[in-house]
Amino acid sequence: MNTRRIRVGIVAPSSRLEPAMAARVKALAAESYPSVELVFHPQCFRSAGHFAGTDAERAAAFVEVANDPAFEVVWFGRGGYGSCRIAEAALGKLTETARAKTYLGYSDAGVLLAGLYSKGFPAVVHGPMPADVSRDGGEAAVVRALSYLSTNAADTLEPSVTSAGKVAAFNIMTFSQLIGTPLQPDLTGHVLMLEEVSEYMYRIDRSLFHITSSPGVRRVAGIRLGRCTAIPDNDPDFGQTELEVVRHWCVQSGIPYLGRADIGHDAANKVVPFGGLRSA
Amino acid sequence: MNTRRIRVGIVAPSSRLEPAMAARVKALAAESYPSVELVFHPQCFRSAGHFAGTDAERAAAFVEVANDPAFEVVWFGRGGYGSCRIAEAALGKLTETARAKTYLGYSDAGVLLAGLYSKGFPAVVHGPMPADVSRDGGEAAVVRALSYLSTNAADTLEPSVTSAGKVAAFNIMTFSQLIGTPLQPDLTGHVLMLEEVSEYMYRIDRSLFHITSSPGVRRVAGIRLGRCTAIPDNDPDFGQTELEVVRHWCVQSGIPYLGRADIGHDAANKVVPFGGLRSA
Image (cartoon, rainbow over all chains, first blue to last red; front, side, top):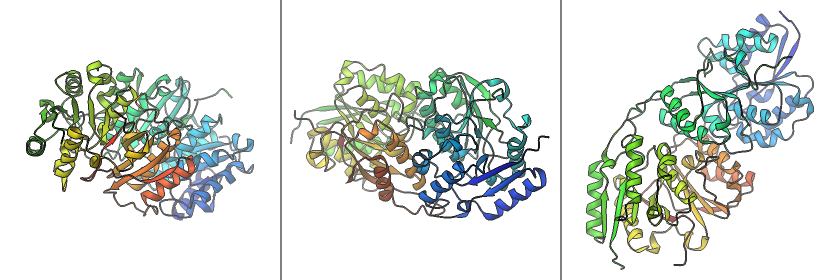
């Protein structure tokens, strides 16, 4: 195993972390990946209404860690909601130092991943976050992230990544709310992986209409469907599964449907490096 | 009172109508506006999962009534969800006959209003629908719509419409899901009125980020905020009202905030003719 030392700065652009989550994640790293040093920015534990601190506090912490040459990785601590409130201001303050780092997260953090990828940052990655430690079996998700950061281990990757060429992965609703804004990334020729949690099927359907109606998205190589979990009951029954829904919109839009993706809001969520694997 | 006869065809591009709703609306029209003849297309009462009939049935009914010279008005019967599933196909089949009509509705029907307005149809109107009869005090909403269709009565209009120049009105989530698609209307120089119902405050915030981040939307003359009702409790408390949220995004985006609009998912919902009042 490659044992290069890595210093990882953790910030929370959306919802706050519980200190107990951070302690469990630090213990896991110390036990399994002692070469990975985790530094939770104090902002992770702040609170302001819905968010892990005010917009200014969250933006400042993200910019501070991203621009600090002491860190090789910026790890987003948790999803929830709030990244879009700091994205435009914070992304504009990143330096060349920030460009060299790896950025890891998913769900609401996808807003920042999209913005970073749009700016041409080379190491923007969908994958587990520290707060996943609280899920059923969530330690495996955290260990997977540490393994990816430490050794780029192939078994951490979403299986199709190896052969797919360019790839990207997003939460459906998060991605939908970037369409038509300056944060929408150019995914021409990419395989786009999409997953969802806790949304009614009619909303999944509506967001897939939205996503697949974007002229930019119609230039993707294809869509893969991740897991859609904890879907509340529709009244009346929606009458279509998420697979039928995504196939419907792929047919309507002329986007190839390429099969399932091994991503989702769960402990099995795999790593997807935006842009795909590059020969080093 | 102007007593010109008007034939109104009613279709349901989203969710189905109960026959009892139709009967109550027909009785109201017979009593108060006998010059207005209401014809509920049988499709209004069909059912297919979430929708008032299959996509093909809903699209066909809309196209049939819009293209039928016997009707001067197409009235959308109810919101819910489903217009986006038929919009692209149905709008492409409309003829010059369809262009001459008035189209009235709101909520999910805003998808079709947006598409019709984008195609340059001159009489696209936000206002009450037949299903509003089931709301508290909803007969007043239906009578308002009948009054507008029958006489263009000034007291049916959202108050700022008279002096505002170009205007348009949308449900926040419905409009958000059109951003960046061919259905997003060019609202340059328009006052954009926005309302919402039954959405968490964090979702209202996120959709306002989305809407106000669209370069096209940044060319509006300003935003007016309609009523946001039945907002579920946020946990933790979001910490901002809908007024604070819309003001925040107006400041961020440089869009003037112009005050409240007298629209919403309620019996007081006023009429907003897209494009504003034209000198006849």
